[in-house]
View 1 (cartoon, rainbow, N blue to C red):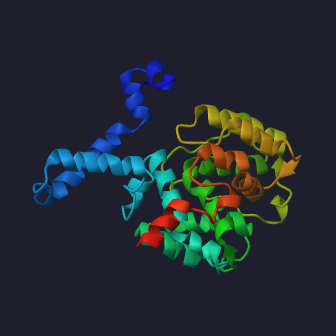
View 2: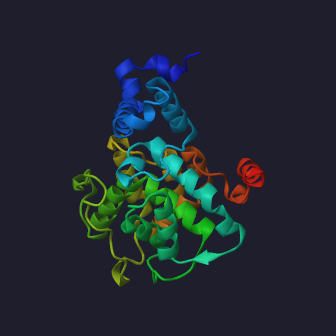
View 3: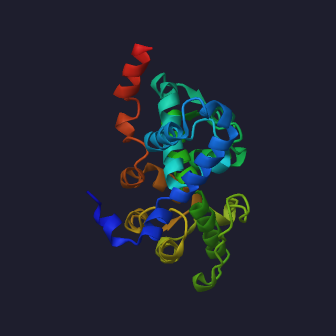
Amino acid sequence: MLSPERLALPDHEYLAQRHVLTYMEDAVCQLLENREDIGQYGIARFFTEYFNSVCQGTHILFREFSFIQATPHNRASFLRAFWRCFRTVGKNGDLLTMKEYHCLLQLLCPDFPLELTQKAARIVLMDDAMDCLMSFSDFLFAFQIQFYYSEFLDSVAAIYQDLLSGKNPNTVIVPTSSSGQHRQRPVLGEASMEGVEASLFYQCLENLCDRHKYSCPPPALVKEVLSNVQRLTFYGFLMALSKHHGINQALGALPDKGDLMHDPAMDEELERL
């Protein structure tokens, strides 16, 4: 039975929304790269197994960074894989540095960029010394926000910096290029410790959400975060996003914080092995 969403959209829009072309192109590339091995059991079986792995979220394992960030589903799958593979770090109560978490990320994605890991660590550490220790849960939820909403947060950083310097919100220029080519995030100093006015900040973010082509948190939840304070700093905003129960649920990649160390299916599989 087709979903209401599927019935409401033309075929080309639905396929684009689900990034079907991205997966078809990747499947064909994989097929051509491994055609000698695939020839032994057939093309039909290859495509079946490929799209089964996409549905299960295992298709992103050990892939290049450009692929794991290519679609929202890929990003959510990578977050879930990272949690499932390394939740024992949290279960054991271990505290790791930013560089150690980056090494774990590279076990799943060898070319994972250090910059993204550093940005996630800054959310936890509020831009303090980057060699401080972090718990698994603190890092994971900060990393989730930074990784999944990366392009959106780069635009938010530009808006925040413009507000901080007194520019008119109606003339804020929002970067839209790929991650890593945006302006650098604001550096917190004495002049910016009190942050910006929350209501004005929300007006800018509301407009940003309306026109942003990348994933962004639900505007109603962003409003909820900003309605509880009069002023806030950039990292204070990101910390609030990372700890927000509703945003975590809306994203749907990770369990609630109270269930973070529980994964019965994985535990059963590990016991079987």
